[in-house]
Length: 188
Image (cartoon, rainbow, N blue to C red; front, side, top):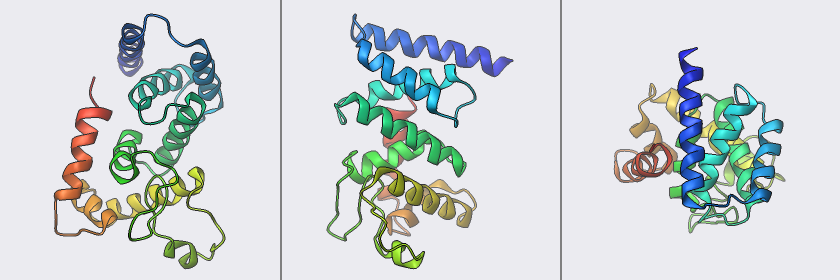
């Protein structure tokens, strides 16, 4: 019961923050968020979905200007992250650092998509025709890989993030992700 009250207060705060930023909330975005909340089964209820999606959508608006694309990415991030028991905000921070939410990003090392997954994984799992620039495929693989590294490192986030980035032994990448997490995705 206490978590429901806390969630309600956070929802009201998030909605007030969004309303304060713009006195006239975009009705089309509101409907997209409602529809996404009703389609999402990774949340405890529709209210929690609407609040989280509204809050995260406001934080992501500058990087992903199209409301439909933004809500779709957020809904899929939440689903894939919770599927493997990761905080969705952590995954958002990883994406922020890895690709700046460019679903078509390809790195100099040939890592691809939002979470910058290396294409060799497709051959390793016997799915060479899968497209890592497809949001669902990229998030499914990226979240699974990060969860694996979290388990491998006994939930030591710094070590797991370093493995994810291929920079084991260095804190530089992990610190970037943790800064994004703290300053953008987890702030109240």
